Amino acid sequence: MQTLVDGFGRAFPYLRLSLTEACNYRCSYCLPDGYHADGPSKFLALDEIERLVRGFAALGMSKLRLTGGEPSLRKDLPSIIASVSAVPGIRKVAITTNGCLLPRHIRTWREAGLTALNVSLDSLDPARFVAITGHDRFAEITEGVEMALGLGFDSVKLNAVLLRGLNDDELPAWCQYLRERDIAIRFIELMRTGDNAAYFERHHVRAEALEEQLLATGWSLRPRAADAGPAREYTHPDYRGRIGVIAPYSKDFCAGCNRLRVTARGDLRLCLFGDFGIALRPLLQSDADHDALVARIATQLGLKAAGHGLHQGNTGITPHLASIGG
Image (cartoon, rainbow, N blue to C red; front, side, top):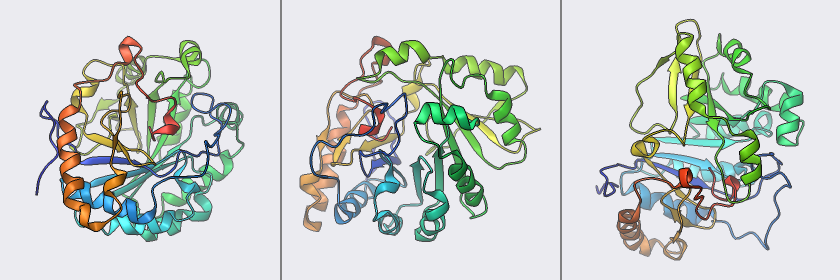
């Protein structure tokens, strides 16, 4: 089997695949005015998705995360999960969702082959949650998370974007939440994108400040698995749960990059904040194009840069995170 290794010696066992650009939330840091379609949906179909995943699996990809927009808006999501989880070589199939449909669908997704779950939950305060997301769905989300904890997932994680003045004082509440739950909360440092410059200036807070708090209160950094996401994860003997910190502005953040991205329209993105995409969709129309697809993916990896340009204010061609799946 070939393997995906770039010119800096980084291996890529992890693919983030967006299923749709659409989202039903209006999060203040991503789509404050809601999602607006630019014509008929042209997102990858089930057969295209399966060919794509087979191509990456042939290059050693073993972990797949389904993202959006909001992936649960795809009515064929259970079929997608079943299809990709059956691809030889795929060991982990995760999803990142806003969680509003969890109580209705989480059992079906688990039965279809989903192995891990990430749910966006930007605040443990229901009123704050509404203010940040534009939706009053806190009760459904937390109900769905509790259901998921009993379904035998390899991991259940929550994601919260760290926002100055909006939710950056909630660490004590999160610690209490984690005391008896086998769950991880991931605090994500707000990233500047193409259309949120003013918001970024108002609400950006360095994630490293949170890490200093954790270390000062007895939390310890945990070793990172080869196919793990970008979070630095901390544990504490008094808490069953874990705290992860995703700090894209920290020193050497990109040195541990192990993931590639494909958009809902079939473009390979070598970096979340890259300046270009590589069209894979023309090679997803027939099984006969498998070898050409594998060759294109492997060849393009040589163009991956050492790191992003966020420190210089370069957000690439990403207008907002919903456009690529974060």
